[in-house]
Amino acid sequence: MNTKVWAHRGASGYAPENTLEAFELAAKQKADGVELDVQLSKDGELVVIHDEIIDRVTDGKGKVKDYTVRELKSFKANQTHPEYANSVIPTLAEVYDLLKPTGLEINVELKTGIYFYPDIEKKLLKLAREKGMEEKLWYSSFNHYSLIRMKELEPSVRTGILYADGIVNVWDYAKKTVGADALHPLYYNIQYPGYLEKTRALGLKTHAWTVNEEADMKALTKAGIEAIITNYPDKARKIIQETGG
Ligand code: G3P
Ligand code: MG
Image (tube, rainbow, N blue to C red; front, side, top):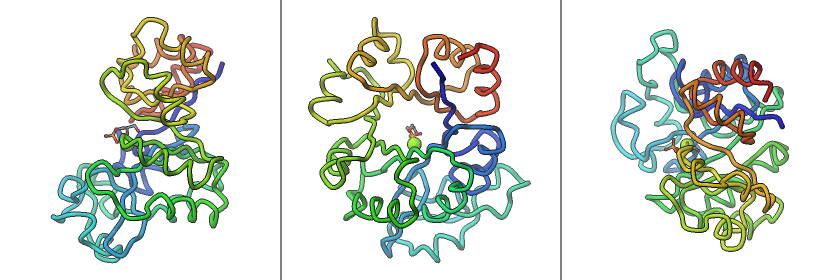
């Protein structure tokens, strides 16, 4: 059983989240994949940013959807890490170009919980085809309608349901209602009795977030979880090596 390390918003413990620099660092730290968040710009481009507004992660203000890509790129990523002072919001196409040669997996999280970005699902499928990335991608969302839509448009995509608090009979819900391939729980959920066993019995995988404490990384690796999503891919890699997971 090999537990994978997916870098949450890139190696975001060390570089500005969801930037090319954070993704590059994740590859250097020997992550198996990265997790990132996508939204649509005013001109309909897939852009990689977590919040619906740019205020927290850039020196600008306002909604992602009210700016063109060109405008979004004129803002500097937050200066929390002075060594990355020139980081900007990337497009998803740029991330695919950067990571394709590394072979890393990419967990694309559709941020469709607040704005139902028109045709974001179609755009994602089109870009994945154009860039030849289909085999490397997992799609997740807290908006499970988006995941159903992805499968309607392209049944071969891999999807995972994101959730935080307990969902009653999440296994049946994920498998039968959403048609998902994985559970993407806030990692506390795994303490429900028999969680990983039930998940595996249905052929589902578990990719838990956001696991930043070493004790939790160790416990989840020992339990044989399929992927740990973390801001610190280097720490998770070390623990998995030590644990033999
Ligand atoms: O995909 C895991 C995690 O990223 C979900 O929450 O808010 O960090 O996007 P959030
Ligand atoms: Mg996310």
